[in-house]
Image 1 (cartoon, rainbow over the protein chains, first blue to last red):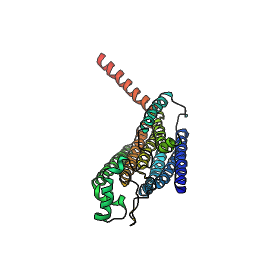
Image 2 (image 1 turned 60 degrees about the vertical axis):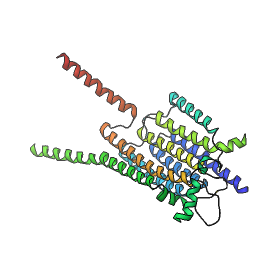
Image 3 (image 1 turned 180 degrees about the vertical axis):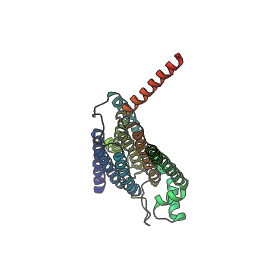
Image 4 (image 1 turned 30 degrees about the horizontal axis):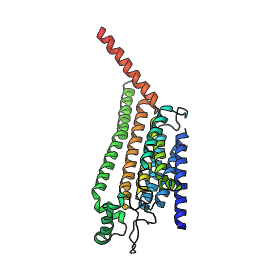
Length: 195
Length: 133
């Protein structure tokens, strides 16, 4: 029971930190600070995932969310600009929209199963079969691995397709630029020779 | 009252984070900031799924041979996929921002809109004089 209370306290304080970091992201005008704050945000959420027993997710979030995402953000920033042009001020319209949607969502949580409950529908349907199958049929100790690679392998195939499409998209968006520049340079130098 | 608070605290924080992300996407004009807002929104959804999968007194879903109570592994699998897809969409979004900056030399939404409107206005004016001639 003692450890239960500690768990709850850690969970609540980490979740509160996440909220504070998110507010910091809203309020910072400097995009460099925003990128760093979003890295911190990802790292804190990785810690939350550990307290919620999702160790694989925490590992991925720390590597991808806090690592690669921050690097991408900094790279984009060097190619664009480092701070927002307009001062941070409160926009009344969006504020009302978000408060309205947020109130509706919080009203919706009232009927949800309490946090930590094993009677929740998510635990009843197919998950016991996955756990038993992982032990008896697949014999991989990590249940997440056996579901990811075996029971839901097509999800992972779809994920790969999405990453491939995104990679092609990035190549087309940024690769075209160099060709244009090269074309410009060659046409410029051609003009120079004519002159 | 305390029990209700403890039962729902994670969900409420998730809603708050989600709305902060949505606010950034709607209210901030800078395109890089909008993508950060989308990331905040996205991570809050991850948090929601993982919170739903938590079993009180459970452990991480790794078989150790002892009979144990595991947290729900299915949301973990779904969110693993979602994190990787999320980074792919972030990369695509940032590439779009870089491309927009090259064409328009700005990444502020209102300036982009002003430029597009100016183009439309001059084009209309040109076509109007063309018809008159």
